[in-house]
Length: 405
Image 1: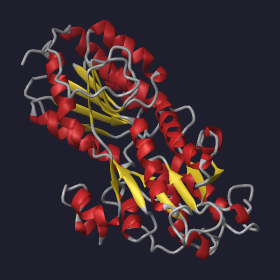
Image 2: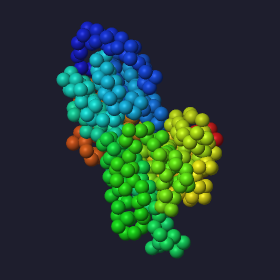
Image 3: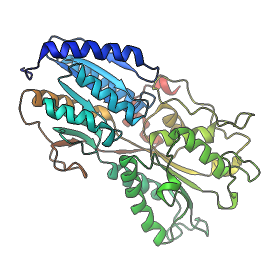
């Protein structure tokens, strides 16, 4: 394999300076993993955060695949902060990375780093989050519109329909929608796609949206997604006298269904439905996204929630975090929409190798929206219900039976 000629002396000096800078400014929110190398090159991998199973597993799989091909790998997590990710990618380039694989939190916050990469001829591969990055040579992508539509359709299929179900209530199901940051283009696209599906059901009188009818109302802008979703869920389902989120909701209009459009929001909803509120009325910590995390609390709503009401809520969420899958198994969550990031890893690694060799990456013929013709391959989403846990999550090695015990 041949790699682009680099100014090794300058890169070494820059790398030493960058290491010194990082040592001075390192924080506990940044995780790094370095593999071995036989001289093939250095690949930077920039992922959003390590407390989502999706990204933790993606980091492990990318590291293993790329080190297996002889590269040295620098995996970094941005703790969900777009500016941190921009700085991380810039530092990777400064230290002499030969290519970078990035799951972008924000195109704007990567602008300086992307300009550097283009100027130096450094290949950039977009991973999972299908946002168009200037200069990217390949996208191993998941279509956010496909995810949003799949989640909304799964929710509607689980709700009673008065037109076909004699046992359906006389009033339509009341739906609350929760999503991520309103400034995150990925979250916005996913929300918009889900709303297109839900709006058709609203027009038909099948459902009523009682929370999250606008992006600003559904979003968690300025707060941790999981914590915000937990607070919002408690406020929506708590008795009127319990003011959890700063303003009590009217339980007469409490939702009978919740659509949580992000992995973190799903964990927050699960926490609210399974964990009693502490005595000081501060929302309890959200369940960890680590695949090896401690099992979630037993699935019974705390005294701050109306137990009967909480037990009747239909929840459709996102992701394969341990807490989410446990809640799925226990009937707290009805369905989760899951994409295995490991499916995209060989595509990303092949693209890195091809771009470094000056070749065109192989593609799968898909054309995800918003990528402006960038060569790509995509991974599809699966709707996972309790009956699917074994075939889709255990048999594939995403989780083990011991994890769920």
